[in-house]
Length: 216
Image 1: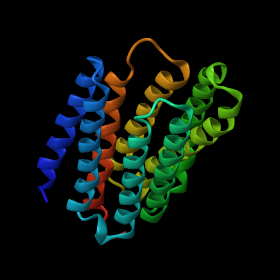
Image 2: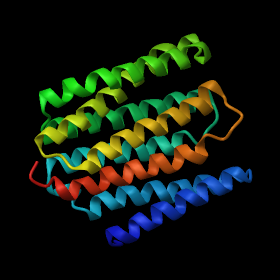
Image 3: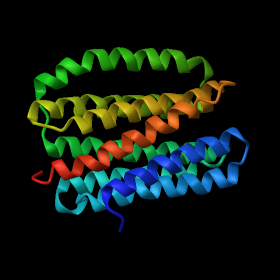
Image 4: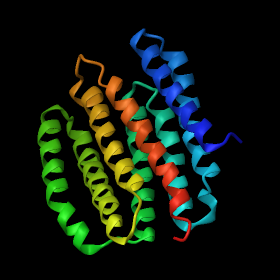
C-alpha cells in the first residue's frame, strides 16, 4: 500500500480530475476518477492505522459508507439520490459514534450547539421550497444528523481531539451544501467545483485523524 503522503496526493489529483472532466461533460471518466479518489481516502485511513483503535475503525466505516455514497450519487435518478443520501447518513452516524468513542466535552458541545443549530435551521429554510414532499423528511433527518456530527466533532476538542476532526467535519458539512444546491435547488452554476474539493479535503482530514487517536 502507498504511504499516507502519496495517498493524499492521489486523492487531490483524482479530485481535480473529477472536476475537470465534469466541467467538460465527460461523466463516465469522471465517475472512474471519483472511484480512484474515494478508494484512496479509504486506503489512507487503513495506512494511517485505522484498525488499531475503535475510533479508527468507526472512522473507517464512515469512509466506506461515503465511498458507497459517492458511487451511488453518480446516478441521476431520484432512487440513486435517496440511496446515496442513506449511505452518507450512515457515514455521518459512524462519525458520530467515532467522536463519542473519542470523548466529547459537554461544555464544548453546548457552546457549539447554538451556532450549528442556527446554521441548520437556515439551511432547511433555504432548501424547503425546493424539496419535494417525499424528500422533506429524509432531508430534515439528514440535516439533523450532520449538524450533530459537527457539534460532537467540535466537542472532541475539549477532550484533546485533533483539529483534523473539526476540520474534517466542517468541510464535510460544507460539501453537503453544494450537493444540496446542485441536486435540490438545481443551480445552474456547477457547485461541485467547490463542493468536491471540500468533500475530499474533509475525508482526508478524518482519515488522517485516526493516526492521532489510537488510544481511543
